[in-house]
Image (cartoon, rainbow, N blue to C red; front, side):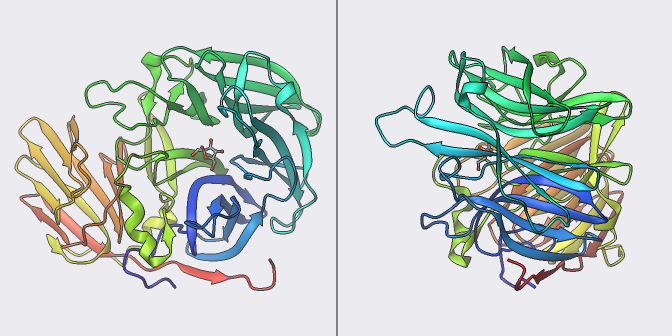
Amino acid sequence: MYKTSLKPTAHIVPDRGWLNDPNGLCLFRGVRHIFFQYAPEYPAPGPKGWGHYATRDYKNYIFYGMALSPDNELDKNGVYSGGAIEKEGILHLFYTGNVKLEGDYDYISSGRLATVFSVTTEDGVHLSPKRVLLKNEDYPPYYSCHVRDPKVWREGDEYFMLLGGRTRDDKGALLIYRSTDLENWSFYKDEIFPGFGYMLECPDRISLGGKTVWSFCPQGVKEEGENFRNLFSSGYCIGDICRSNYVEWDKGYDFYAPQTYVDGGRVVLVGWAGIADEKLPYTYDCSLKEGWIHCLTTFRELTLKNGKIYCFPVREILSLAKGYSRVNRTSLSTCFAKIASKPGTKVTLGGCFEICVGADGINFAFIRDGFGRQPRKLSVKAEELFIFLDNSIAEIYINGGEYVFTARIFSGGGGLLCEGAAECLISGVEEFNYEKADGDR
Ligand code: FRU
């Protein structure tokens, strides 16, 4: 059990060092595997690879340490992000090997190798040797060296691999390769999207409620009113990929690089509760005095309702609540709060956030003090707020997940205070149990 003060107790955190994107998410032989971008030596220089947690019940977790490390000439600067798929009882994991060549390069148009690798496993833990599937020369010549983050899906007897890319003239793009055996891949098609910045990372393709949903992380989307306020965006399009169809997954400060998987008829999404290249002062650094940085969001079930995707914690996570009691103030640092809003409702957490419900809806303002960032505002009609507070992360679900707002919070609690709500139910959260798998790795 982690007992440090900033470490969330019911979210995936690194045991030490750095975590970013969730990788290789899957339900395989009754076990959910959660791999993630992991640099255990951070902030000291060291390898970046895939860390690995596994759980059967979303409550008890085994930590296997580093599952995939950079160990060859084509992935020596990082085992980067990718996904998983099962075929005939074997789990296949795909990733991008990152290499920065030594020399005078800009590392955009030259100097970087992006190689797609795969490994397989029969038990989810012991991995086969690495196999090279695609190299820079397999991408169309109008691409820069930024092509990465393979995610594979199946359609009939064929498999398709989605990759995110940046063209030489700085446009975000998606590349699709096809295969019948998961080993031999050929270029199928690509699409270059104007209006989505200069690079798309971490693409995903989801089947939800009979629709095809494309998820991706465009870098460089221009802010529009209350939308796209993150330096790096992350959202989805239902059906056609175009700017007018693009919806952000999360309206908070800290959400990026989500990945989905199918879990017993449900589609579940997990994101990195952080964001790349945030400008200094680096908001998250304060957890480094405890020797770790970043966490994942909780597991969010996706539902398609009236042409919109709702995200809400899976029922197993909700069952961590110890039972609701009817209070309107809590100093618990780990809790669920469900608040039926009516005009005049005000919810605050120390100096971290303030939610005010006005006569015609909600005026949501998130102020993370000390870092000089503009408050996040959202004007929507809100009937219900659901807050999952876990030490240094707050996930706020509005109207059962119609809008979600994720942020890391570091200003030291003070407790949730909720005034004027129609109803306010607050409960404690049981801690996750993280068991270390000694000897396995
Ligand atoms: C997104 C990302 C991916 C890359 C990984 C490296 O956060 O930049 O595109 O594979 O992080 O850690």
